[in-house]
Length: 121
Image 1: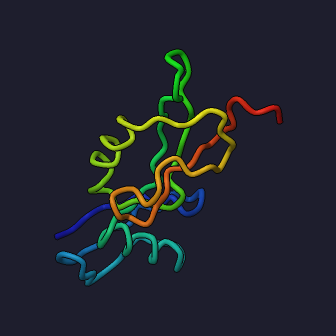
Image 2: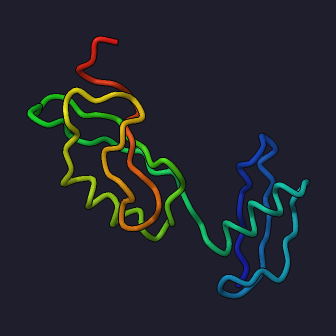
């Protein structure tokens, strides 16, 4: 199977072609550097993304709290993670980097606050 990947590691945006089957990469072409090779190989075998979204604040109906995953989440679990986040509420007050959901769906990633709300600082 061939897959074309646009590298996001540096501003060059190389168009990299990866050939392989399942998680096995047989060839990588089009990369200008070793970082592009590493990125494209990982993206082909096991794509991951940082999840950014919002979560409701407890007792508030007019304000949402921006949150993100503390580390990349497997791409195939993003929609399932969103279902969990949709039913969650963040306590008030909340500080930036507070954990809102720990180890979401066993991915090893925490959903953390990207901003503070209801604090004096």
